[in-house]
Image (cartoon, rainbow, N blue to C red; front, side, top):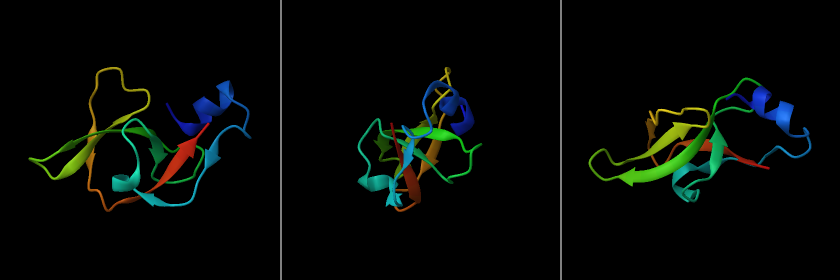
Length: 81
């Protein structure tokens, strides 16, 4: 689900892009994007994987649970509703 899709269900004022933060500083289950463009994918922070030394994050609309690994130092935009 893209930011544009979420905006269909929420008022634009409800979706707030906060200032940059590292993935490491977010709590498990927090939403974030890599950019603030309307078509940006929204990810959910998951567990830390020691084997890969990264966090497993899944796209908001991914029903199969596929994910992407992000290092803790990557800067992202937390999304709040």
